[in-house]
Each structure stands twice: as C-alpha cells, then as structure tokens.
Image 1 (cartoon, rainbow, N blue to C red):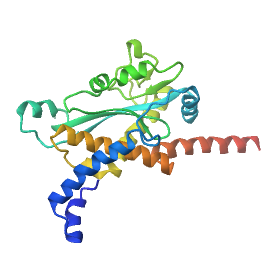
Image 2: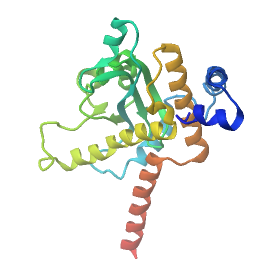
Image 3: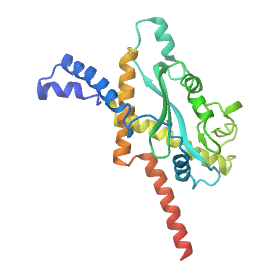
Image 4: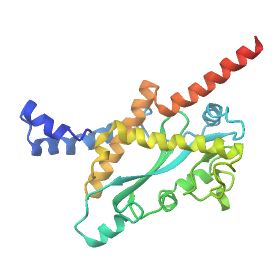
Length: 258
C-alpha cells in the first residue's frame, strides 16, 4: 500500500508498471473477499449487552461522560480530477480547495472500525455522509443508555438526542465545562485513528483514482486490514490511550489505599 512500491519493485525484480497494476487489481478484491466476513476484520457493530458494557468500561474513567461506546469522525481523501465536469464538481470541496472523496468512520474504544460510509462525494458534509451511509440510523437504534461522541460537524438533535454527544461550539476554551473538555478528549480519539489509518496504509495519502470501484476496493481493503491488524496485534493508538488512562487510575487508587 506504499506510494514507493511501484517504482522500487522495477529495479529490484524487473516488475513493470503494468504488471504491478495488474497485481494490485487482483490483490485488492482477493483481500476483501477473504476478510469481509472474517471475525477479526469485518466492520461490525457488536450490539450484545456484554460487549457494549465492555466498551463503556473502557471509557468510564471520564466521569463526566458515562456509557460512551464509540467515536465518530469524517475523513477526506484527495483524488485525481475526473474527466467529466459534473463528477469533478461533485467531488470539489471549496473548504479544502480540491477534489476529494469523503468517508465517515465510527471507532470503538478498542480501536476497530465498527461502522463506515466511504466513497462519498467530496462536496458532502460529514453529517450528510453519515445520513446517506445509514450511520445515523444505526446510532439511533443504539440501546439505552449508550452513546457515541463526535465533533461539531454532526447532527445531535431529534431522535439522535442523547445518542450523539458533541461540544458546545459557542464556548471558548476558557469557558468549557469539565464535561465538554472530557468530550473533546474522547472524540479526538477518532481523529487520531483516521490519521493512523492513513499513516499505516500510505497509499491513501496519494491522490486516489477517479474510478469509483477502484477507490472503493482500495478503501475497503485498508479498512479490513486495519481491523485485522488491530484484533491480531491487540495494539493501536485508541486502545493504548484508554489502557494507559485506566492503568494510571488503578495505580492511583492503589497508592491512596496504601
């Protein structure tokens, strides 16, 4: 998945660009086919009470926010310009000044992607992408008392009230409550993970192709491989963060008891 693979493989193995491209075109569908239903890799939001409780315990040291079981955030992937002006306009994002494809990822406190919407037009707002990908519907159906956290880009009203929590954007840093500061810490975990996904699979930093199928295959392959890696290695930035917090709290409680 590295940007450097194509140019490095030729001098080492005599592998031409066309051979490399053909191998990628064959490998990505193979990865998806083999991992899409793999328990360690699949994108699945486990709603069993025991698993939701385990997720809530992972974030429970943020006393102002209880029962948080996920973090939601969007991610823009830079793309090549499409030949069709309508497609190019659909992917143009005025805020970032370029053509992009959007994605929305819901992360659990153990660092896995448990819900996702990918390959959205770059002009879509994160909230619009979440609506189209049915992520809002999945969150709305989340059983009580569990909730997820996000930044100010997402909708939190109506039937989503109490299920999605975000900070009050009108408050400055000095005016933030303890709850808002805790919420900011929690929802930033999704931002870290979005960057980790791109950092590990560095091809995602290059401009993605204009073909929807090719883009989707690349994105899904990276998502499934991330989940498989996380579940197999049992280590990523979100898991490490919460484990450190929970460990520090236990050490502090033990020292106070002594």
